[in-house]
Image 1 (cartoon, rainbow, N blue to C red):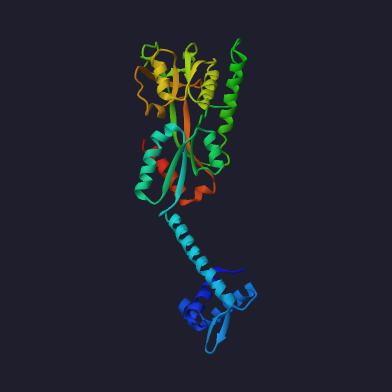
Image 2 (cartoon, one colour):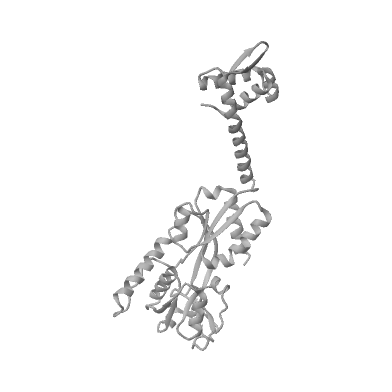
Length: 330
């Protein structure tokens, strides 16, 4: 096998014309140069140098190998420099996948701070909700995925009330199963960012709108509901089941301004993550804290996820650190 150190010796011998001169150039002994040249000739099974008088010159095979050695050594040098730049955070790449509310709240300050201290690190962003974002991470389409899960979720939904259409029961159970499956992070490295409280949205004139304290979900059992993304909808069904009722979901939309508009028009109530309300003006609605059946505040856990091997990459580790800093600074 041809080794890079042998090619460097061959190049020095060709440039200087002797083993002793090559040894001086490379800072080693003449016998060491001779031994490495013998090892290289053994690897290729042909002589590479020809003695001529008091000097030496390359054989035809030596000239061919030197031609390729020049490109190989240049490529290795460039590779070493690029790797050193990445290790020293003078270069690198981090591909982020984030759900929309984190994209508008946590990602901007984190990326801005990273670029301010390490402008050579390139960061890109695409949006996807879990579990799609986790599939992208495991599939090598990104280095860091921002995701969320609900600590109250169990993956099962209590039996709906008698008379509920079969299609609605099947949909609720499917959403709960997807919720549970998408929250399996056992093969990933998770950096906790924050607990995002769920906030209840009520029409401004609602009977509970003026309450100073939190609202129990059971108090909203008779309301019409407006639900969000499939995972959020599955969690809403689970929370309400834990409170002893099945929500009547009349509207479902991933668009948070649409949710606010529907609630403001008096068409139902909703529960949104706190991060979502930072990007939406809740005009015409009242916001209230929401407690689950256990009496604890309803929250979702927001985390940054990566693969174990990727967690050791300097640029990825720095991105995780900046995301944690952005969350802690809220």
